[in-house]
Length: 195
Image (cartoon, rainbow, N blue to C red; front, side):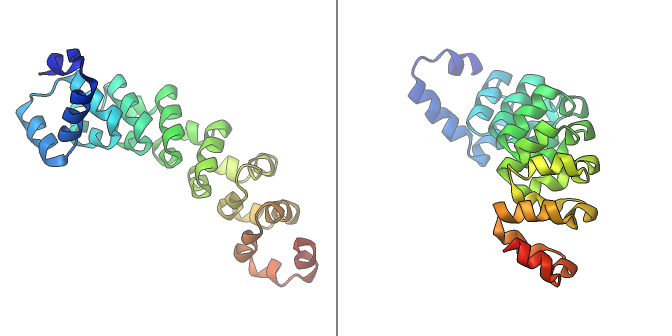
């Protein structure tokens, strides 16, 4: 079946086939019957990376399969083999696709400033998955705040008390004022500087 699908010149017919297969019931039927080739499954993940979940046991250590899946849905990296999750190309593709994939990768990637930056551009909440070193380094944070000031809410407690860094973040994103510590909220000088 795989070669017929892959050699079919009619792209529309192929897309219709993929659409049909991507329904969970149809996919489960084909997976149980083993009628889908590896190439078919790779092509399915190009259209819907979530499908990887349904055949993860069989292909959790298949580099090409995982790469194709994470390029479409980064979070599925959590179903990949540990060795694959430690591959820089896979990790970069996953985080580019979905910054929350930072949660599922090796700690050395959580300590990579460029990858953390990519993740926080998508959502400040992804900063929770950065290494403690990054979350507590004032110099690194003063640079990262430019990309998403709301990350200050997920920094280590010491940094969340740093007046200059907080003022910089508030200047970029005034809503951060809602999350500052009670001590700073009651500090008249700080409030005057912030507004």
